[in-house]
Structure formats: structure tokens, C-alpha cells
Image (cartoon, rainbow, N blue to C red):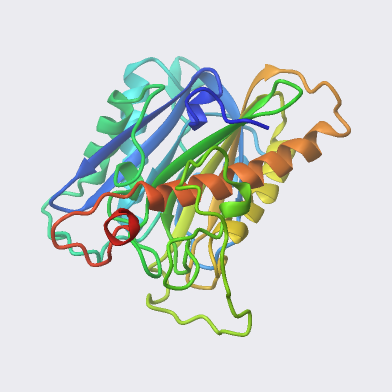
Length: 330
């Protein structure tokens, strides 16, 4: 395996990502869309999720494709980012056709960043505006770290952020990951700089520090956040042709990447969630074994994206937690 040309989820041809932030509120939103509707599914393994339109992603539901996926800060308020994206897509003539009306299908997931030091007193919910702005900025190139849905994110010990990674498989298929990391757990070992995801790092993409210990498996984790204040929300994408059931299995496998990169993960206080998206550009060369390979790639890729989110986070005045770069980079 090797990273794609950008080492971003947009190495999957046709995908675009847009980010928008509000520095006063200290929050943001991220949107992923494609040139045309794509197959999507979701798997939720955290105990405190916040979502919109995820029920329709089940394989037995009428709508089999979506127009965009949204990740946002803001807790329940942030679900309104998808409304801004839907408005923008409708203006483009995008959406599920019902008679002469088109209804954009925009599932979304949120993370809790309401206690990160930003000014959360507003007269009008800002997330619809942020969603629309993120859609307007969508492109193949985008920044990582303190941007989009990861702008105000925090982890158990360091600033969180938005991360992405990609991998090109031997059969030519591409897998990409996008993650907004606001976890209860730690992405690094103890008080040091090394990342739990180090065994899956490619090309020194988050420092090339390797994995060092010791770490005591008997140590019990301590919670610095309260119920509902943490989550890691992510998207796995591929150019393979998958149906919704196969996408759901891909999302399930990708959750292994969260467990590899964050300790502890999938807690009762996190809303850990993974969307899977398939653009259908390539037919599986071997339908029996290729889904297994895609699942492994998805888990590895998501672990890398999570580490990159924290590695790329930028220090800012009045930070409640140190950025990895401020604390460890020399």
C-alpha cells in the first residue's frame, strides 16, 4: 500500500471537501460531496451520537444514494449545517427527484465543542451559514488540523482537529479517510509525543516517531469530559462499486481504525461514528476477497487520519489544551 497523490480522501476521484469556521464561536463544519450521488452507509459504535438522516442509510430503505455528507461541531445545534448544505445543493439542481421537486439527501453527524472557550451566545444558529460556506469552498485540496469540523475539537490531553489520509491498493482501488477528532481518549501515548497509530504510519505523515512505551495496560483511563462532550466522527470513501450493505460492512471495519488510534475509544461518553461512501467508479476484481482488503485498508487509513488531525492542529491564543505542535515539535 502507498498513499494517494494528495494523501487526502479526495484521492478518490470525483470527491470534494469543503471547510468553514467561525473563530469567535470556535467551531466549524465540513462537507464531503461528489460529482454525482453516491452510495453511503453508517455504523455507530459510540454511546452518545448526534445525527441527521442516518436511518435512511440502512440497506432496506428507499433512498440508496446521498448527495453529500456533513461533519460539524456544535452538538445538536451543528446538525443545522446540513440544512445549509441542502440549500446550496438544491440551488445547483441536486437532490432526490420526487416529481418535479429535488430533495438533497445530506446525512450529518456532530461533535460536542460547546465548552472549548468560544463565544456560544448567538442570536441565530451559525451552523446553517457554516454548512453553506463549506459547500461553496469544496475542492480537491483542503487543509488539515484546526479547520472545519475539527476547528474547536479537543481530545483527552491535546487539541483535536480534522485529519485525512488515503491509500492506493495493489488492485488499483483507492480508499480515503476523513476524521474530526474530539475524543474522550488520547491519541498519543501517556505524556509523550508518539501516536497510537504509529504502526500504520506511511511516509512520516505524522512525525515518523514510531511507537514507544512503556504503556501499562493495567492503567485505568480517567475521564476529563462529561457524558456527551466527546466524539470522533469520520468518513471512509472508496472508488469501488459497493451496495449499501457492503458500505455498512466497510464502515464497521473502519471502526477498528478508531480503536487503533484512540485509547480508550467507543466509550459511553463518545458518539463515535463512521460513514462509508462508494463512488462506484471501479468494479471489484474479486467480489469474494476484495471487501476484506477494503475493510483492512479502511481501518488503517482511518487510524492515520486521526493521528494527522492531532499532528496538524494549530496553536491559538486562549487554547484550553496544548496543540501537539506547540508541545512537542522542535
